[in-house]
Length: 477
Ligand code: GLU
Image 1 (tube, rainbow, N blue to C red):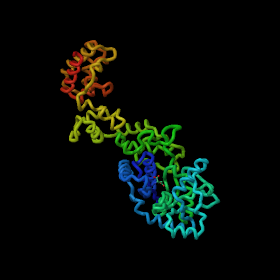
Image 2: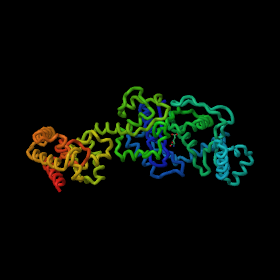
Image 3: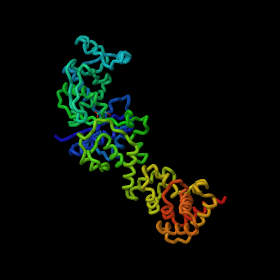
Image 4: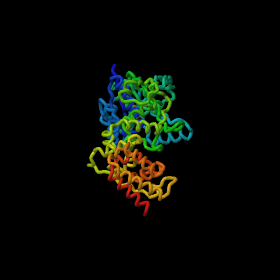
């Protein structure tokens, strides 16, 4: 049987990091097995529905390169199907109508909470007589449909990651399947769809593990063959900390994209959150992941979200880009920061500037800070020009020496500049650092930047000399 998996997000907001990790594992498993990857939007919870969410989710998946083969399928367009199945289950005696008002249920919940009991339906409507049921239905009383969980026995299933799980049926609640407004709950809708869409492997977050016994009972009630279950460990905010959530900062995929994380880095990073190849390999392309991925190597212990690791991967993939590719990626950030216009050409100057910072860039959003001085004259206090053990006079002298030296240099290439400047420093008895600090500060206006020789080469002779003169003026003011 060919593998069919689905990613089934609820459109309640932007796609989270955890959701993308689930989608990635579904995708890798499907591709590895030459199966089908389906996108299903589970939009039957009208209270939490966000109209922009489905678009956001699709955008984020495409950005990450997780293209689906079927879908998106919207559950809200399939309401009749779920309803039909709920009634079928009721007719077969595996479900029953529940007429309890929301107020009664709320009261019951509060009482149970006060007594520290697990929230459970007390099954009042399960025991109504046929006549009572009919009367209420005739009166037009609104009702939900609940599953009729067997009162005794044990429900067992096997999870690929968590192993054998068994639960006593007494502990399972009579879950609502169809709400009184005709909308199905997640439990009914996803299961009917998984069956009709011939899903072979249900891969989803660990938070659904406790609900799975209910699902197993539903499969049995319908008389349907069960898919394999594979629950993925939660992503933790840090060691010994709880699940990653909004209170730990950005969790939406789009916010990471905007911050300048590359999809390759995000994919590489997320793949290792819960899965491990069993070797020391850390860098993986999508193709390598597809080749090596297996659900059996997913661990059941929570995976720690480590931002430094993500930055490490991102820096790695930034360094792997050609200057042309990187320039295209970085440009919108420079435009947004007001350093260049939309129509600024991607030409040699841009590439040369980029080359001097590529090594140290961890995120694309750092580009304006790293590159600003290439696109606008730096603005800085005169003190920046003075090295630690220097004085304004010694800094000014160093700048004069540099200006004299550079005026004579024709070939403005870094190695030539280095040789000439070091020689000039030696001749004038200036320690090289005391010459290079004011020089670099005058060119960049920054405490930290690429080295003076590289910057000189990119800026060129005229611009460099202009900046040095201005710096000198600042010192002598
Ligand atoms: N809509 C559910 C969610 O967003 C899907 C869970 C599942 O994959 O079954 O978590």
